[in-house]
Image 1 (tube, rainbow, N blue to C red):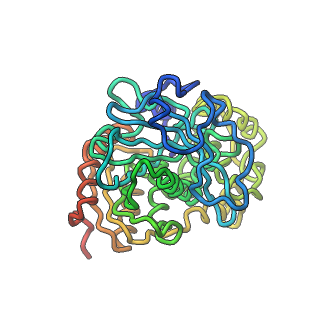
Image 2 (tube, rainbow, N blue to C red):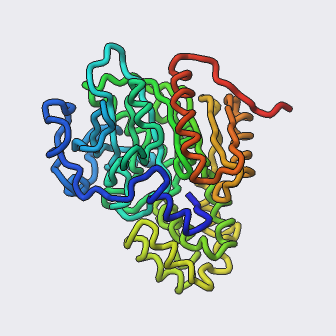
Image 3 (cartoon, one colour):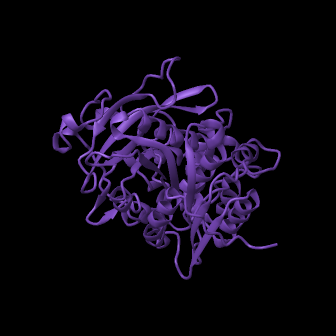
Length: 407
C-alpha cells in the first residue's frame, strides 16, 4: 500500500484499527483448551511456531496444514488459531505460508460460510506480519468488522501472504502470489472438518489487500474451482503497482514506499537487480527494511538521488516486471462493493474509478460508495460498518446492488 506521508505510514500500525503491540507469544497457555482445538498437528508455543525453514514435500497439496497454534485474543464468543499451511504461490512452486483462522464457539447445524480478509501493508519484517500481532486492543481490531462477522456465524480466515512471518522474502504487492496464498488459507479451513465450513466465501481487503482481493476474484474459478465466491469488497484499494510506483517516485517523501516495494517484486521475479533501479545511496537503505515495520519511511526521506535514470524505462526489467504484476483482468464472477474516501491521496479517487470501470466492464455489479472528506485511514470504519450486512445479503442470495455508470 503506497502511503503518501510518513504520518500515514506510521498510523497504519498505530491507529488504523490495528494494535501496535506485537505478540511475542500467542500461546496455548491462555487460549482455548486443547480439547477444543481442531484435529491438526499442534505447533509449539511462542514465536518458535513461525520457525519453519523446510520446504513442503512434493506430495503436499495446497491447503495442507503443517501445524496450528491457539490464539488467546479471539473476540468474545469465538476461538482463533494461527496456522502454517501449504500454498502453491506460483505454478509448480509450493511454500509454507502462515495465517489465522477464527470461528464462533459452539456447534453449527449448517455449514458455516467463510469470509476471507486480505490485509493491508504491515511492513516487511517478519514480526510485522498480522499473525504475529495482537488482534486488537479495546474495541478496535486490525481486522475490520471481525466481531460482527463472527457474530453472524461465519468463519473468518486470513493469510499473512508468502514470506511474511515465516522465513523467506516477502512478496509485497505481488498480487497473484498473495491471492493464491489467500485462496489456499480457505483450503486450510476446509481441512479442519471440526469447523464445519461451507465452500462459499465472500472476501474483502484494504489497500494492498484490495490488490489481493481483485487478484483472488480474477483467478478463483481456475485456481480454486471447489469454492463459490459470492462477493468481494474493496476498501481504498491499491491495485496497479506500476502506476503507483511511478507516482511515488515523483515525491521524495515516498522513497520509503518505493524501496519497500522492490523486494516484493524481486521475490516474484528473482532475476531483477536492485542496482538497475536504485542508486548506491538508496541501496544502503535496504537493510533498514528488516529493522522495523516503517523505519524505512523516516530513513529514506532524506535521500537526494534514490533512483537510477532508467529505473522505469519502458524497455527496462523493472518496468516489465511491474507491468507483469498488473497484467490481469477482472473475471466478472463476483459482485463488488467499493468504499473510497474523496480525500484519499494514497489511492486517489481517479485510480479507484479505473478499477470500478474495469469491474463494471467485466460484468460485475459494483456498489460504489464515496465518502466526502475521508482519507485512506478514516474510510475504514465506514467500510467496516457496511460490509457485514452487504456480505450477509450475498450469502442469502439477494440481488447485488449496482451503480455502474451507464453508457
